[in-house]
Length: 152
Image 1 (cartoon, one colour):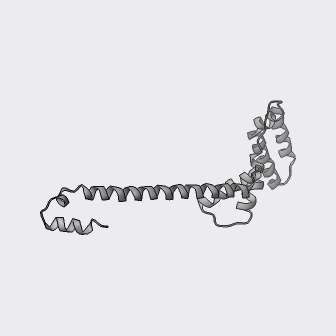
Image 2 (tube, rainbow, N blue to C red; image 1 turned 90 degrees about the vertical axis):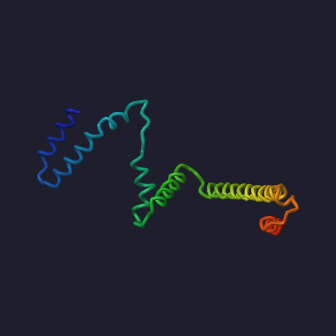
Image 3 (cartoon, one colour; image 1 turned 90 degrees about the horizontal axis):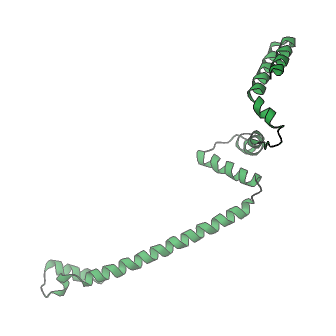
């Protein structure tokens, strides 16, 4: 790394234009800051990461090259969808499976609701039949009212 720093110093000293020197300094900072990763890629056990390339080519091509207004939910869903497709996923099959799962969930929810309604009806009928005020012969305002709503 010492030789690399010396090389950058020589390049900076030999560069005449200040804007070019600034560019070389930025390159020096970037390379020295990532030197360990640069060296590691030549190791036999190194399994690299192409995250920068993926961000640039997969996500940015849709999310920033054609500027649009994105909600947090929308940008998250688009990023996941593009990553899914880039990893070999078939979007049509994914959406078809998701739709099937939603239909199944809706059907289960509807059946649960039907069961709840049946239990409510059966439970309220039994409760009305067990009210003592309806089984006595006394005619009160309450008994007349309950008898009038018993058939609902």
